[in-house]
Image (cartoon, rainbow over all chains, first blue to last red; front, side, top):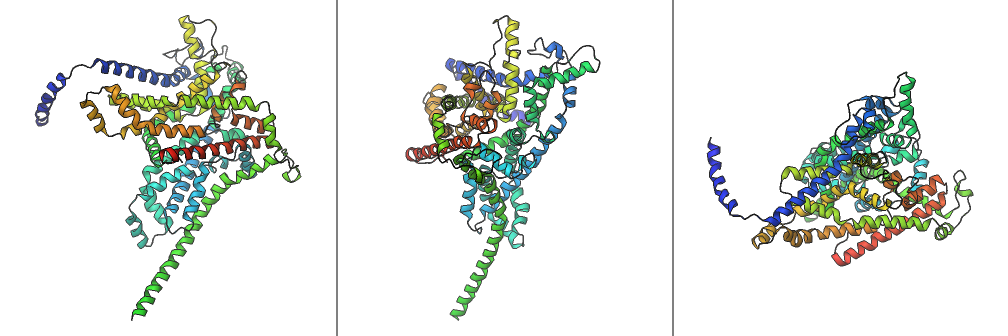
Length: 313
Length: 314
């Protein structure tokens, strides 16, 4: 009751002011076109994802005649067949493991190294820091990379996915900058209590740096989920295929897909009810879905990260 | 009296410094593994550049391969494929530089949106393509633009256009198509940095302009644009230093028989020479050539930026 009476005078007071402003037609047309163009851009971005989704849940034969805005019929058969495709489940596990393990390794290495670099007692501090940072700016090239990885015995090894990405100069800069602005007194009091460097790192620095560490974890996780070229060039073992590459192979080799669909005929079904196109859509959906579901929640971390990078860079 | 306090202080200092040194060793020991990681994965591959000076064939150890000096570098000038590949690389890089103002424009448009939820929607949705891999972009593009894809089906339903258009296999338009795909993937993400710059503009400037009777278009032209120009220039300079690094994954994924010729960029050529043709030495030489030019470009651009802006970009 009180609050409504309290806000009323303010509303009354603001009303005549608003009325006094003449309608600015230039402003109106500006707004109209601005909103229209942005709305069209949103549509152009969303539609391909939406299309894949409605196609994948459509009745396969109906969908072949074309879907635009609504699913044609309804069937989950494409998904049921997809999850049973050889290699899909293994690939999902590989992709998930590389995402989890790779992210943990990157987060630990970048943050612990950044912490060490903030310690002035560290001999050759500047030189070590530069040594790692400079790696951002050069690249040996394809064949040298390929041969080195082979020499290390990382060919056909899970470690190839998670080790080379352990230290990233950019991440180290971000975390180091963050740690430097934490109050030094916290660390000093822990030191007086007899805590060692690693103990201080795990009990004070790491928890306090959570905002920036979360950002880096998200960067690393999305990167891991999306990376496939290491798999493409150096891993042939079918047990170690990533989901991305499996999708790529299915997109390119229609023979695999027709095998899957002719299996239906072999099973004794009289009509083929599944097209390769439907299975393609279902696999694409499975690879894309984790990102689409997770990224809006992580968006703010990303934005924070890129802004900090912009300030530093 | 005085001397004793002096020695006491000296002892204390000595004790402290030896303590410090011990700490220093500990820290150095802890940092060592990370130095090794950086060395193993970033510096060791550089030794692979040595292959460019030999006539190396996989299977034969390097010690038994003939030294070829700069022959593999000279080979580049007589390689008939080198011209078209450089052309593709530069054309695609140039087109992406040409579209560089679009994310800036997009950011300005988003910043002019008054409605909070709409702004958030546009920002969230427009960054989505940044988070997906090129393989997924390919899957989406294929489902949209293949002869049986959404666009052709839609046109057919409307009764427009006779034969289906094969967008992804169009030899003439492949550069345009690829540039648009890259733009689709990156516009929202690239806009974030401009949006951050716009947010940090002092709002008093806008208020003052409004009092002076400036409309939206004039505030954009005289306040927003000049404020984000420095950001634009830094990004532009960076993209110039990346001139020879037109995206590898994108063109690998979108390469097909129809367009392969015009889409083969330097990185893709290096890969094909190495793993498909098996000419490790020549592939390394071409890769080296690319890396060195890129670094030289980066330094040049950095120097220019220091000279004219008083601030480097790296």
